[in-house]
Length: 343
Length: 283
Image 1 (cartoon, rainbow over the protein chains, first blue to last red):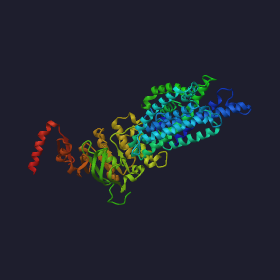
Image 2: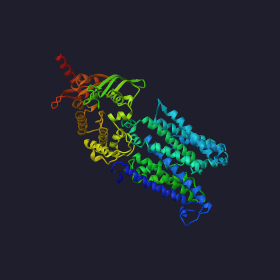
Image 3: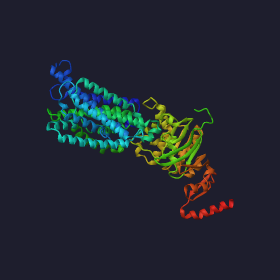
């Protein structure tokens, strides 16, 4: 709290960002260094020689994996922060506005149609692509339903999202009930949330999309601060609230849709990490949003490392780990620091 | 600044507005000059808050026109409006535990344009605004921990930090004790006198209206029943008919302005007879 005696300055943002960036890099290095197969980052130091298999493990398997985990964690946490700001509700998470339901339907349908086992270069991208289409369709549908007289009503968005998620869950149960045992297994693991393996090109596209979306949301940081005074309060401070709401809904949903398409329903990151960060660095979105991207990334990289190591050589779905660690840790923080936090 | 001396700070003409089918404003016209403190007085639901929302440009779908310094408010961007006009609402929400200083600094939002952070000058403006509202010692505290009276002073400080030429107040003193009521309206009067700020305030406290307002609009069911110099409007006959309540109106011996006291219903009859008797003998 001592840090918060003075208002936020560019200086403080730089310092906190640097700290979190360091933490993220350390987590990434840890993530690269551990896992099945005895090879570590330190083996790259001069004097050690790597054979081609070890090299492939580092560059082709672990490096993309930790980067994807970092991007997924960052995207989900940023989406959580902006949805909480949009709804002025600390219980919002990236999945609350319904897009995740649409993405799940798309992914599950693709798996059921047998598209999950298509071989070839882009074969592994078919399920994520279908899931992302599902997310886009849902985004358009919810925006259409929730736009009344040209305005996006926040409570209608929220209710539509919640109802749509329930509908999506029912639809997925239905699909599961008619799917084959093999497909059922695939569906369950898809929905539990795991870090996918992507080729370098796909990773590059994914990274650019996530960074662009995050950048566009960070640009609205000051507007989110004003929005904490309510929509009318923000309007009185000169915020074009309709534009901010719509952009936030669309960009946040795109980040969420992309993440769910890639990683399934990785829970808790987008809910817990924003709260942990708010407790540590305060609610100002100008630092909270960059911190969410870096901190969320670090969190998911660590969770993924844990998921890979705890039952090695078997892997746990990372979504299970985030919920198992995130839940109790969050309750602990809530009990010990809730007075400062003020909820 | 406008060089035209005649130009009104705020000019509203022919305002009509409906919430759904219910018509809440009927042909309201209103004019406010720089340096004026103007009151909107009337019972609950008479349209005071709606007028303030329309003037501040956050409500559209009305007929008629609101001009701020000569320009139609609906044609201005939100930022352009917020650089000139600040609003203190009756109640505010605070979604996240920002500190008081951070909340007041949000008043600088429209002035920051492309910058991401407030400058030292902005921080000084915010601190001065807090000091002026007697709330400087609250600066580091989370806004959600404050009492409603303290919060209202912080919101008022935020409006001051906006450095507005037009200040709209919607019952700003409802939750305040008399000391802070007076303090807030003293500041509003200083802004009007020293900086030519135009102040438009909705208020229920008729004695505050009497003390601070130069001009009063008396509203009932979305219509302006009377407007004029405060002492001409706050009269026994106007007030009893608009509020359907018996009042005792006298001259405040200290200020020479109207003094208004509502009467309980069992005193009302006796008082009514005396007043009506006085009217008859006057006529």
